[in-house]
Image (cartoon, rainbow, N blue to C red; front, side):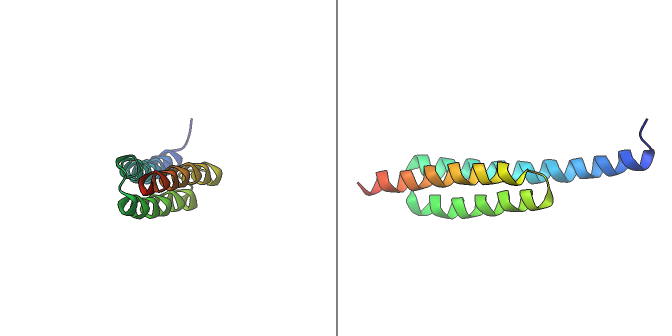
Length: 88
């Protein structure tokens, strides 16, 4: 059975990780929504915020570095594709 201190630390880490992951997911959702609506300027701003949130979560260990990189790549691809489609 884990010691009380280990349980306390794990609980604290879990709370921080959940908050960081949740914030990153919310920012990604906002960026996706902006890209799908076709607002290129808002999508670029939302993309920058989402990248920052994903980087912060990866830096703190709430997300794996490659997981954050994959999400950033897919999101950037979506936003860039939306910008090309809105220009035509």
